[in-house]
Image 1 (cartoon, rainbow, N blue to C red):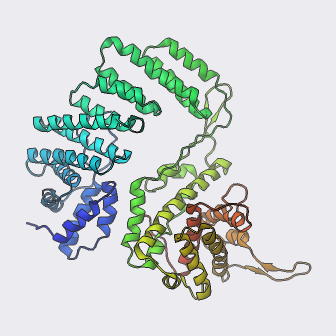
Image 2 (image 1 turned 90 degrees about the vertical axis):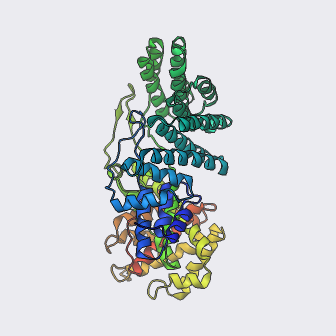
Image 3 (image 1 turned 90 degrees about the horizontal axis):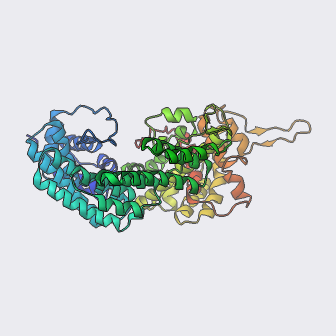
Length: 555
């Protein structure tokens, strides 16, 4: 019978502390040194648990996603999960472990149900007490919903009552800031309906307050319809269609208007409202668009940010930490069709920017060939580089927090006998120090010439970088644009060559940072743009040091 390893329990609690999610805790726990081989085995079993998603409690839920294949669980893993389930202090982890054990049929079912449900409910209270931000509120609603479904399915009356009470309290709390909590309110009201509680009054109040989020308002109206009397159904259905029509009128882009009008026509048809359907279809036919591009703002999931920081935390020294910032740029530069097919890239959700053309005779979508190197494809790549820079900035900030390197430590980490001798390494080291002091202009102006010099020295032994005088041609040294174009010929990845072109020298569709900054054509660059310049230097140095980029574990 295995025994709890104190070092593993301490590491587990430390990883769970302030973690935004189980996925974020995974990176911290996996990187921690816990000592003996027995402790490592237990840590790895708990990492596997944190990576596993518990099964959906009520299979009939419409929003349940298609289940992914679940890796097999070993008896040893189950014993370790059971060992820690009752001892871990964090209620969210306790609920998670008991739920996994319930799924596996390990132990007494009532004990597992109660352990999971009470853990989720206790965790929801802690989340709300720690912070009132919308992310924690949404996580708390999911915990309460899951606890209520467990209590309902396994007929635990006292837990069902507690889940109902907590859900009501949570709904009242969310209603106080309803304009920012529409989607969380929708989840908690759906949970109350599952627990057979009449939420008509709460749903009506929420729907009247949540007017800026169309999807949340429509969901709340549908929740209201379920508990409202039959005599009000037509009124509520009309409100749903009017919500979509109003959103179409307020839309700031043609494609958004088209989207909302299509939804209004569809909902009017489903709900038996022919007059509103005709109104939506007439507005659709009057919508004339040419080469309207559909673009979505990219956001970086917290788990990805936590993963980038965890990679720095796992580094044994400053140099290794600097190499962690050199991730694979390929997902950013691939064609859109390849990105959509990619399933293991952290950039998949960040970079999908669908494109469409609308026939002027009506809303008929025509998808252009994805292989076309058009402005939209390039814009997508530039957008991806921006997100890439944000991730790099998070890592550089974490490197500074952890190592607090001075000039001499940075010189020792960056110096290379051939491509970056000590005097130039000192210059580049100062660029990093300026960056960490938030002196972004200075950091960019100091780093950019070093990027060009490092690249020139890397290419010197593989392709000509100096032309000799011939006739009227005086000869000279290849500048950055020509050097970047020579990278594929010298054996360097074409994706990085194109990425650096867009970043540094492309004046038409790229960021053009080298020219804009050094020629005084731009103001202070954003922090993530400067992070990309520093990353470019590290990428080139990684080749000089013989480093090879490993796959990004946040994928």
